[in-house]
Image (tube, rainbow, N blue to C red; front, side, top):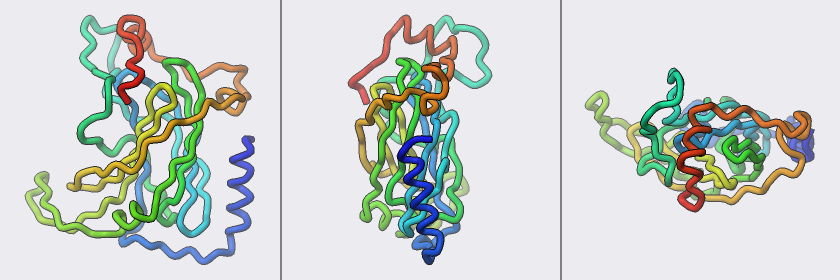
Length: 223
């Protein structure tokens, strides 16, 4: 178990008797992840430190959303239609889930494997009070999907993970435009994948992404 995870568990135990007051106007906020096309990632853990002083270990894990390769694709394509360079102009919600029971986050710790390198990274992403205030504030907006005006909330934090240990976060919500939170440079975790329990072996990269990288390389510096 990593030192950070031990600290997180201890903090959770110490905070167990704290009064837990939710500061948002909705039941739960969402944490999602995505990666650029072909730049596959495996998230070992995403731990949330919320505004009430509580810790939610593994609030996120697993595969993030990715445009290419497609989930049901078979074989190496003749033409690679994805483009991993840079971040999308408008990010989606990513793959993830609602962090139920938690107040709005103050900090998110992410430990992930960048499979194209391969390398293991970890970092903390600070969510400032100004962003939490945006998440609390309702905004009148028009939803084209159902043709209605609603009061929407930016109730989701979306994190993009890219090679080189780049992590970028946005806050967004239904029918509302995303707002950039921060961009951080993660550190290489010296103990390697799975807290050193895997003998240095990372989650496997798909044949499609491997073929893309062999042909075009990794666009470092574009994120």
